[in-house]
Length: 259
Image 1 (cartoon, rainbow, N blue to C red):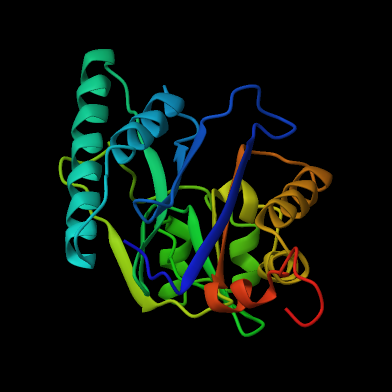
Image 2 (cartoon, helix red, strand yellow):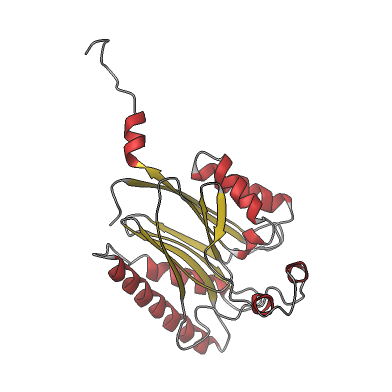
């Protein structure tokens, strides 16, 4: 359930990029459930598309929760089921299969950002951008420990090596960031194919300049493809509108002056 004072407008796009033939990314938008999600099949491994599709299929059964804790519990149940199914498929194939995942959950005016791997969630508020998720990658761990600089991280040879993914371990560890939604907030959920070519400034500019989620997605996808599109790219943009202000802007049709 979402606060009737907030209206969510969202759009998503997924593209294989300019180098890869197969798109192993998947996304899900389920505003009635309060869920927007991106799953990115692990590159360099078998059946990444199977793993990301499995996550989306389970999350599509989320339904409508009765409370924020209920919504998170449903989410954790589905991600656990997806993890088990992916591991079962991997065992039968004798291969390593997995996917990263980033999601936004909303209930009334509360939100939860949940992630595993290097797909990301951003929040744009009052002209500023904040990365809510924190990458599960080798290079991020080196940055956190102060071993390398941000400039070194951008060209680090193992910068794409992830340390967590759905389907890899028996127990799936999901990180979470909680917060409250304000009218005017914009959330951007994207696979690493987006952030490989678009900076935080690019994401902020698209979310700020575009009036609609579809336009913001198109601007960001164009940026990624113009800069090489070396990976699959998936972008979901969610704009949180003030419902009362939108209602006040609706013109009254069919009334003559004085009525």
